[in-house]
Length: 365
Image 1: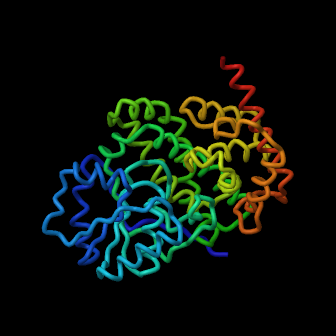
Image 2 (image 1 turned 135 degrees about the horizontal axis):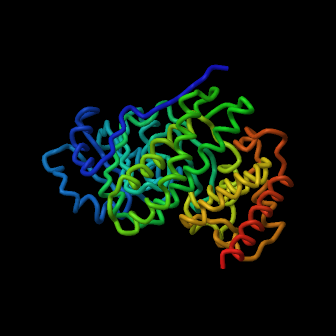
């Protein structure tokens, strides 16, 4: 099997980076369309100071869910308005919708994340959900985004919960890449892990442990510090390239299983992934020392460590078995882990992680 690694065409991060957007659109086409999340549409674009006047740039408000209905709606606009550059500006679902719509219409896509809540911006894959928000499948594009533009002022002004959620998503990167490398499983590029992917995944984890707490404090005060800058890069670039070129594993499959429970729908992708990491450590017989480090990190920055933290107040084995069964679906990346993965094993790992989290909460009181 060949080794494979994918990357975005350009990555630009810093204060005022949004000013680069009009010229970037001009670089890739003649008619631009910004697919904007509701908050971006209402506040960020009008107050950005970026002059779109005189430019061939349309702005469309995102419908709220990355599902087939919304993608079809955007594709219709692209064809009707002869759009040849699509900009996804907002959170993960806005970004994923833009990536899929651009791929299906064979046009360039530029990604402008307004929150650092997932590693979606740099990747060449996207997650599709039902109209009700239940995970359906992962859609792989023919290429990664032409450019990713990250304005630190916008990120710093966002609610801190988004940044913390992004740390939860990024937390999985090293553990899943490590598993794929050990089992020689395919990464998200359809090949074996590269040294680049593995190294960036490990750098992502090290960056989280070193700067995560300080970055959260900075974000709470809406101030831009080197620590915040490092964590934004870890959440978006290091995790994005690291997961795609390193590979996925149990944490994301457990996340996908958790989406089947209505109680978890109010919680962000990275929050559910973080609990998936904790369960994955129990599933894969991680050392108590490593498990303790990861639990401590989650506690410090405010990521979920128990099922109650994800809205599941009454732990019901039958309900959680449905989560475990969905996590073990044949197409799931949990099968990149060592050994045979079964719903029974996953259920026990979820219950074990929850029990450890509850015990640690009592000790912290």
